Length: 90
Image (cartoon, rainbow, N blue to C red):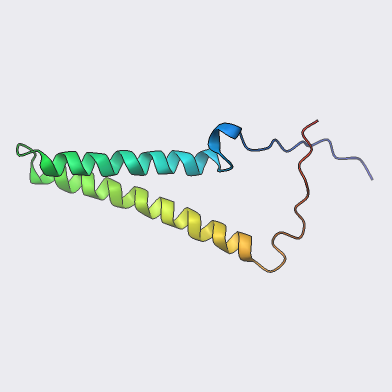
């Protein structure tokens, strides 16, 4: 049997143990929440602008929620972690 040459890189320490996808979604979520707050407090904003900002926030919240639901299913699946081994960085 041939020896596997694939190396799995550990998560970047800059992400504090989270994936860059997860960190990116969280950043977008904060950005969209701040945008909705700004638009709501701006007396010159239109209903369309506010509706668009709220819809964007709803989309990002859905992506974030779906990611975490999917990851929880993966992590809690029977035997889902049995095959995980320590990552070799050399």
